[in-house]
Image 1 (cartoon, rainbow, N blue to C red):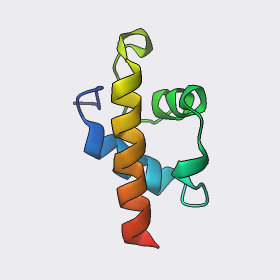
Image 2 (image 1 turned 45 degrees about the vertical axis):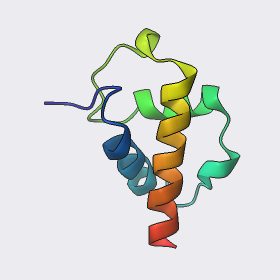
Image 3 (image 1 turned 60 degrees about the vertical axis):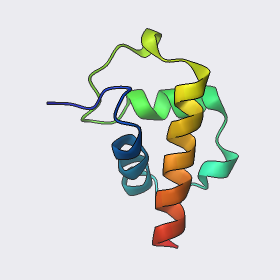
Length: 69
């Protein structure tokens, strides 16, 4: 089963793995949306996301990024 918008922590981890060179603190929300929807395991509707969910994903990515630094 693929990732959905509810899988905030898993998406953050996947983004950290897919883009280790990116600083998640410098990613604009539209770019973050694109990056999430381009993940191989992501299977949800891009139209169903809200800004709060994207912000939680950005925080989860930031947390995963900090653990790997």
